[in-house]
Amino acid sequence: MFKNKEPKPPKPPKRFVIISQEDNFATNNKIIKDTKTGVLYFFHESGYAGGLTPLLGADGKPIIESVESKP
Image 1: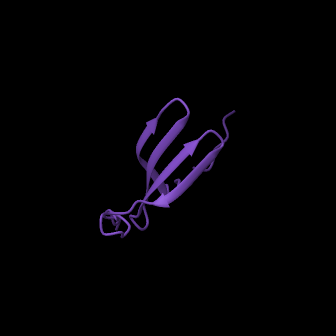
Image 2 (image 1 turned 135 degrees about the vertical axis):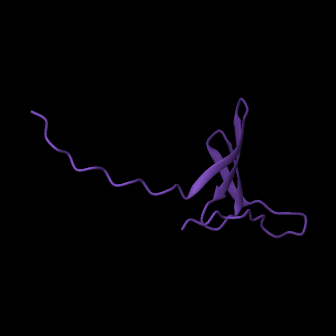
């Protein structure tokens, strides 16, 4: 018969989420948000190479979006 399975624990929320993505033939650009700090990152990949850097504003400081607090 059927066995009672213990319910799976809820998955924790993802730390990084993709805000924007542009795919071209050989390149890929993404803006990624750190959900704990609110910092935005720019990721670029081309072929087998890639790079990640904080997204900077005109003042040279990292762009930080608000972080939704959960009770």
